[in-house]
Each structure stands twice: as C-alpha cells, then as structure tokens.
Image (cartoon, rainbow, N blue to C red; front, side, top):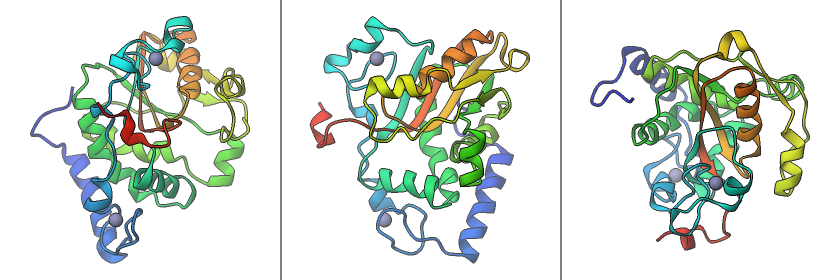
Amino acid sequence: MIPKGKVSLPYRSYHFLWNALDWVFPPACCGCGKLGDRWCHSCLNQVIRLEDVPICPICGAPTPNASLCHECRNNPPDFTALRSWGIYHGSLRQAIQQLKYERNIGLGETFAPLLLSLLGSLEWEFDLMIPVPLSKQRFQERGYNQSKYMAIPLHLALDIPISDRALVRTQHTTSQVGLTGQERRENVCHAFTAHSEEVEEKNILVIDDVTTTGATMRACSTALMEAGARKVYGITLARAGLAAHPESLLG
Ligand SMILES: [Zn+2]
Ligand SMILES: [Zn+2]
C-alpha cells in the first residue's frame, strides 16, 4: 500500500511548507518544551509503540497472546480492523492534547511518518480516507478538526481521496472523558450518518487521534456500512484507557 522509498511530490511540498514555517516561527517540543522541533527525538523515542504489544486482531486492544478480546468476541464491530501507533501516555498524550486543544496543528504533519509506517506494516487496501468529523457545535468551538490535520498529509503521501462530507456527526455528544465503556458506546452510537453516494462499494480508512474503548470507531463504521461501504478500517495515533504502567503491557 505504501510506496516504499518513494515520497510523493505533494507530500514533500507539504512537509517543506511546514518546515519553512518552523524556520520562521521556531516551534517548542510538545513534550519537553525545548525550542527547535515540534516533537523532539528524545521525547518521541520515549513513546511505547503498540507494535511491541500483543493485541486483539480486530480492535487492536492489548490482549494476552494476541487473542480476540472479550468485546470483539461477543459484539463484533462493523470495522474490519482498528490499529493505533502508540500508547496514550507521556509525550504522546501531550502531543495529542496540543494538537487538539492548543491549536498546535503542525503536529498533524509531524505524526504523518508515524502513521504511514504503521499503515505500511498492514495489508489494508482502501480507496477513501475519512477523518472522524466533529459535531457542528464542537467545530465552532474549536475552529478546526484535529483529525483532518492528521489525514491531509496521508492523503498527499498516498494519493488516495479524502472526504470530510462523506461522514457527518449529526449529534453533539458530551465529552467522552470520564465515561465508562458502556456509557461511551451509548453516548456515540447514533452520532454519525454517512452519505451513500460517497461511500457505496468503497473500502474506507477512518482516521482519528485517540482510541479509548473504540466506541467512536464502532459508531463511524456502523454508519458507513449502513450507507453501503464495503469495508471499514480505522487508524488512530494513540490508544488510551490502558494500564497505569503501560510498560507492563510489553512482552
Ligand atoms: Zn522534547
Ligand atoms: Zn477486540
């Protein structure tokens, strides 16, 4: 899926543009605050990657011996697979919070090589990319959709169409923070509507910043499949809601 050793010109130009902006307005590292990089190597290298953790083959949640998790066994989602790059902890948590709440949108471009390397390790074929939409109200409050800033460089690198109209968040849901798994599912289960003319017969990659219980990705995939999508995959930068000591998941 990922063209090896070849980086598209639009992607290189986008990268160049952000680097030029960094040159004019030097960024501070989202982890340690050191000037020069949006996310310095030392902070980035501290992230625990999920490729080193045994996970459920469908939803990507850590499981013993990479077995199917309880949730996927009893109530399989409509998506084919969901994967995340790293554990929502330390500087990855700080990076996402800055992208999401502090308008540090250049981080969307910083995340692209990480997501591209994750996609490169998977055998997914997709022909449309959709960033998880915000509700109208949330979009007005925030002024931008952080997932879109993660999706744009992927769209440029892979030359696969992106749509922010195909899936709509029709219901304004309360924040998911602090809710239990069951409450999160109820909170978002009918929150999305997809447009058949855009998604019919397509294999779709949905892009989001964080997965906690997978409730949002489940709701997106249900709406997309109901509108006639063939398959739905999900990718997020981070997986939250795991052990307080994520190091314990390794091995
Ligand atoms: Zn740093
Ligand atoms: Zn699972």
